[in-house]
Image (cartoon, rainbow, N blue to C red; front, side, top):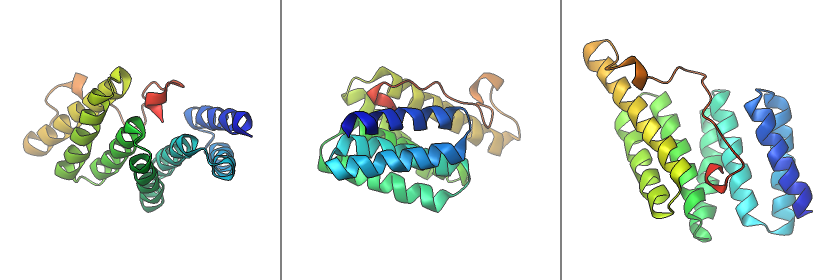
Length: 168
């Protein structure tokens, strides 16, 4: 069952990347169900974070928060630093979506500390990119234009993901 759950998790991630959101949702939920059945908590954290990202993408922010908070709580229970960092980063992105930039920054900085502690370069780079985007949003608010076009990540652009554990 673990092998099947892992394959489903990877397939769900691929569907998510390809914007096949219905397929991603059902596949990741099935993987989550299998992970729960066998008690594989790291897999559960990964699936919960993926579902949080999926629901954020579909503008279902409350649903996204529910999954991300569950991922964060479970990550704390088992001392999964990367899972904690991923869930905090994802929660920060939702805050940024709502324009709550100070709150988003708090999440991003906490995620950054976790990724740095875990010596996770991909997670660290992704959060640094989020912080750059946040600074650009702040600059746009104060001046009406971005500080630099290179600092603005276009809406809908995808950040490279791999099957690396930093990308839960």
